[in-house]
Image (cartoon, rainbow over all chains, first blue to last red; front, top):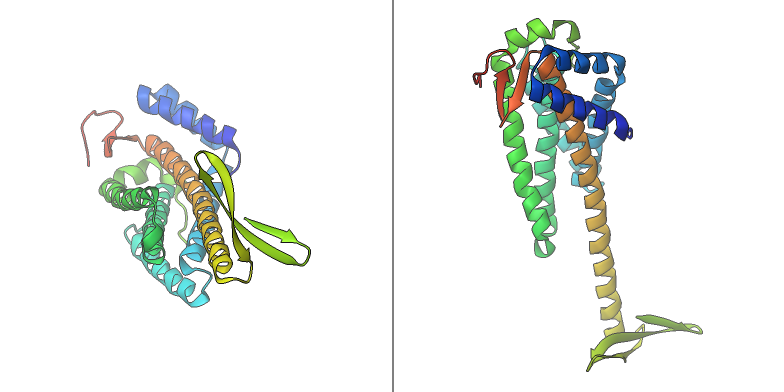
Length: 164
Length: 98
């Protein structure tokens, strides 16, 4: 897991300022911060892998076969999402990761519902609703970004990465 | 509550009568009442552990998603876009493009 709260807080502050001001000065400051902290993107992507493994383990209830089946579904979904873009950039990759984690969260809440139907808390039900909304929202964002691929590739061209 | 005296274990149930705590003896830990009591306790402990485990997992997921979202927003800004109320907008032109 990514433990450096200072980095996250600083990034959050820079992103919020850049979004609020929408000028080149703040965007450049954010760009400089990301250039000076190249590990953030890599750590974020590693962290998503770790989280996905934990969710798969939890959903599979330590059963190898269930875990493998779920991993297969996840790989299939990843392939579908990766095929959406011919030249996937880091933004596309991050959005795909968000969709995959949201999908796993939804599966996790479904499993919780089935497994502990009699003793579900209202918090668990709210989480279940939230995970559904989150998945729909992440897919919508990915679709919106797909429409703008030429524009994004022009601006993020140097930051294209090879998809796994 | 289970009390160990020597080699044996005895089960008691704590209740309040007129605001005063009273312990009702349920029997040795091998009696049916005591077994049911122990089973209930174990189930409660399991539920609590499960809730805690799930809470930890949810916190980790929320944190990961927060960082992903922040990184996404940063790259959107580099690409000349930003997100407002779930809509993707261009930085220069203030019209919605989604």
